[in-house]
Length: 66
Image 1 (cartoon, rainbow, N blue to C red):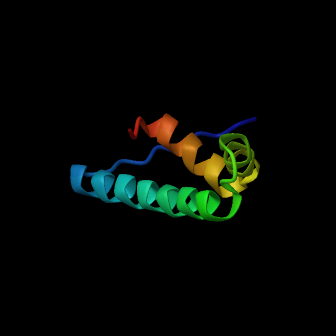
Image 2: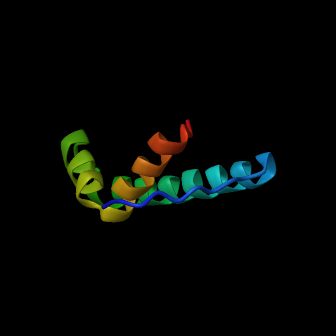
Image 3: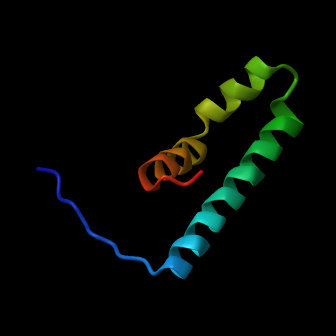
C-alpha cells in the first residue's frame, strides 16, 4: 500500500525549493550538452538515461514548477 505524505511550504520555501531544483537541472543539462551534445538525439538520450535528471523532472511536473 502506498502511503502519502503531506508537506506544506511557505511561498518563500517553495520558491527556494523550485530554484534549487531548476538550478540542478541546469547543471545536469549543461554537462550533458558539453559531453554528450554531439547531436540532439545523443543529448536527449543521455538526459533520459540520467536517473537524477528524470527524478527532478518528475518533481517539477508534480509541483508544477516551470
